[in-house]
Every structure is written in structure tokens, then in C-alpha cells.
Amino acid sequence: MKILIVNPPSYDNQGYIREGRCMQTKSSWAALWMPLSLAYVASKLRSEGNKVKIVECIAERINMENLLKIAKNFSPELIVLNTAYPSIEMDKKSAEILKNNFSEIKIVVIGLFPTLLENKALEFFKVVDFGIIGEPEWVISNLVKNLDKDGDLREVKGLIWKNEDKIEDLSQNNLDDLPFPARDLLNNGKYILPTNGEKFTLLSVGRGCPFGCIYCTANIYYGKIFRKRSVESVVDEIEECVSKHKINNFLFWGESFTIDQKYGEMICEEIMKRKLKIIWSTTSRVDTLNETLLFKMKKSGCTLLGLGIETAVQEILDGAKKGTDLEKIKKAVAMVKKSGIQSMGHFIFGLPGETRETAKKSMEFALKGGIDFAQFYCAIPYPKTKLGEIARENHWVESEKYTEFDLTKSIMRNEKLTSREIKKFRDQAYRRFYIRPRMFWKALKEVKSLKSFISSMDFLRWMKPK
Image 1 (tube, rainbow, N blue to C red):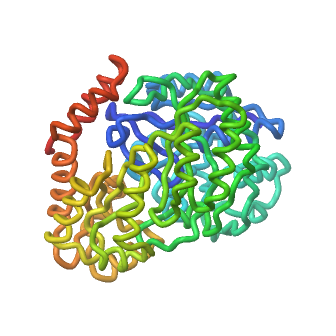
Image 2: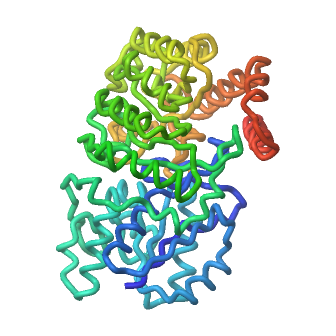
């Protein structure tokens, strides 16, 4: 079968990150991520004898007119469309235009949007034929096989379609069964780190999260079991990126690289054993770190570690079912600093129990707690999450407009704060953290090229009050 895999265009000249559960505007990270899921879908389908093509409209700045020309020349039998909440109106428009021009071609949508909304997502899109719940690679593979033999769609677990109840795929697929992502179908030079101006890529080490944070969609999308790739597979892919694609910078993508500390150590040891000179970053819970692992991470090329701090108030951590405490947070920050790895703290404003006083405490911790960088978000009441359930029961949700479900925006009040106040704290935290002399000089030290300087300026412009 001929399959066109599309990261749909932007109609507002804004870049969008659509990668599984991670959905936000490009400017909030000042770097565009490669669509790793699309590259995995392509490699899986190609390994089974299908002819595939990825059209990366965001990175390549391909508009709808040119997308239609590409589709016409390729003549696909199935179109896979990437989606995300912040860009969903544009994604819908893309689906409608594609269907109007190629009415006989089936369209399937993937991402968190159909995963959380199920048949409501298809009601929203109207022209779309199918949606995928959760990770898409195996479901689309089974769908293609089913369509080839004109089989019974009910056999395809994880598939939703109009007028049918979804049949959820509760299996835990083996990640080592997937071929490496089809990076050869992407222009890897379009994904650039803002600090050094060099190419970087996402690299999956595992999927799934056993923890129950009330705001998170990770275990809804990837499952509650942390599934690891083999160490050899992970490092083989790194080696391929270095030798074949000339990529030396990596974001190890997963819910927490350090959930299994021995596994993390083994990856670091294998990187060092093969003498791979790479730069990488990843994320971690604060309670899954130790000095031995951090030392090996640093020695194998890790330069930045994201920490899920969320708040500096214990009562809010407890209410969010985070399962950590302030002492563990402080200890983790100190250990990372001691290792020589830079830290990025991740904070969420507006969780249940948040007040003006608690928001200020989190802000002060970000400024004085020893982290090197920070990301600040607003709590989002996603469907299927416990936070979404709490917010709707208490009538806290002030907008159900799908495009407002963006971590940079606030659509939810809580017991004490309005959504506008929560957004104000989030924006204030960003400005107070980054518009400081020490951060200015740190940024200048990090900038290695004109391109990275321009990216830094984009970041500063984005931080201005709206």
C-alpha cells in the first residue's frame, strides 16, 4: 500500500510540536522537535513492504497548496495525519481540504487528541475515517493489513471509527520490534538546538509511566508499565545517527530516563565503551536519581537534565499524587549540580490547592533553589486525567475550546485563583527567571552561532507579556 504520512501545515506561521503526548507551540521551547512518531510509523510500514512518504509541513514550511501537489504526485491509498490540541483547528482544516481533493482516500488521525476524546474526535473532524488510541505504530500496521485484505475492522485493536465503539489495545508492544525511525525520510537539518546551532534528534529509550500524577497523560497514551528498549538497540541507533545522519546531539525521549537506574547506567556505559562523542539531555523524576548514575550520565555526554519539580509546596505535591517531597527535590537539585550536569526545573501553576502565596513560593524556589534553567506551565484539565475529572466536577474549566489546551495557556481556575491569575503567575515566573543579568550572561556563553543567537532572541520576544 502507498501511505502518505503528514505533519500538517500551520496557517498562522507558527511552528508546532506534535509528538505523542507532548503538544505545544515551537516558541515555548525555542526549538522544533522532529516528529519521532511519524518516523517510527514510516519505518514500521516500510519494513512490511509498503511504500511510504513523510511530508513534514512544519519544518519544511510546506503550505496546503504544495501539500496537495505532493499528494497528487504520490497517489496514496491512505493518509496518516498527525494532530495536537493547540493546532487542532488547522489540523481539521487540513483533513477537510485533503478529503475534498482526494475523496476516495482514507484518512487516519493519530496523537493525544483522538486518544483522549475517542469518537468525539471523529465527530470533530467529520471527514476523517479512523482515529488511533495511544501509540500508533502497531495499530496503523494492523489497519493497513486489514484494509489490504478487506477484513473486519473490529480486529484492529486501538482503532476507532464512526458509529463503532473503540476496541482499546491493552497489550504492551515490544519496542525492540520496531525498526529505527525513518530519519532518511526527514530533513534532519531542520531540527536545530538553539544553544549551539547544531542538528539534534529525539531518541526513544522507553515508553510508559507507572506513576499516577493527576495532571499527566503519559500513562494514558503509553501505558502504566515502563517498557525499555534493549541497551544494544538504543546505542546502535545512536551510532547510526552519528555515522549516517551526522547527528551528535540527542534528546533521550521518555517519561523518565532514570526510572530504572541500572538500565540508565548500562546505556551510559555502552556509549562510553563505543567511544561515542555525543551531547545529550533527558528528563527525570527527582526521586529516581543517585550519584553513580549521574556521574556516568555526565561522563557519557549528558549536559542537561530536566527535573519534574512541579511546585515547591508539599500539600500541592500530595494533592497532585506526585509521590515526592521537598527534601527529595532539594537533594536531586544538589546532586545534579554536584555531577556537573545542568538542570532544568519544570513547574506547574494552578494545580488544586494553589494560592497566590504558594505560587510565589514556587517562583522563589525556581529563582533561588539552584536550578540552571526552568520551564513553567499552566495546569491543563485534559480528559481522562484525574485533574480533568476534579476540574469538571468543581466547574473550574473556563474553556473547552480545544486549541486552548496548551501548556502555555490557562483555561482552568481552582479553589482560590482565576485562570487569568494563574496565567499571570506563569508569565511572571518566566520573566523573573530569565530576565536576570546572570541568565543573560549564561545565554551568551551558551550561544555558539548566529543561528543560535537568533533562536535566543525568539525566546526573549516570546517571554514578553501578551
